[in-house]
Image (cartoon, rainbow, N blue to C red):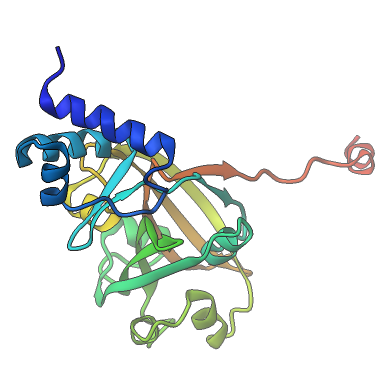
Amino acid sequence: MQTNWQMIRDRLTEDIMRGEYAPGERLPTEPELCRHFGIGRHSIRRAIDALVVDGKLRVEQGRGTFVEAAPLINYQIGRRTRFRQNLREQGVAPGGDVIEVGQVSAPAAVARALELPEGAPVHRVLTRGLADDVPISIGLSWHPADRFADFGQRRSRGEKITDIYRAYGIADYLRRSTSVFARRARKDEALLLAQHPALPVMVMQKTDVDMEGRPIGHSQGIWSAERVQFTLDTDPLPTAGDQDHRS
């Protein structure tokens, strides 16, 4: 026999599948759901929590509970990956906010990636990426302060990274390396991503270089595994002419 919260979970699931609540739509408040189902708040909360873990709902602090918006974002990773271009090509509106900016001493791993002495000054920037106003990523990046003196100030004003690089004479840049692994979300990450802490995230670490191969940025992205999948682009296959030349 089902408990009260399991019954509410199944009823809400049926309502979502029937389209009574559309993707992105906000659910009624807890008191409204209590009155609608004639049941206590504890059971409502447990049912919602279960649906969040299942990826059917998301809870946004101060805003309410929403039906999780599909479809999954297909994020292309290549030599010239750009967040906004990636989303626009899928008909998704990119967005985001700069959460924190500061200048710090480069930790050992960051210094190695940027080919700097450990403890060298770097700009540290924390951001959040949105797709159609839904959080999909948190980004933590480091950039050499000696090369980009006012990088932090520009990011605080909302300037895009590509525009800042261009202001320093870097018209183009490439991704030198990418590594990806999965783990459970930490409490602060789950809050920023508006997802349940029990749900996984994918952690992407990358280093960007200018066209001379000098590192200009190192970053760690925390991506919602429920909302994003990655496609890794490979180099073009060699042509017949290339094969003949090598032989």
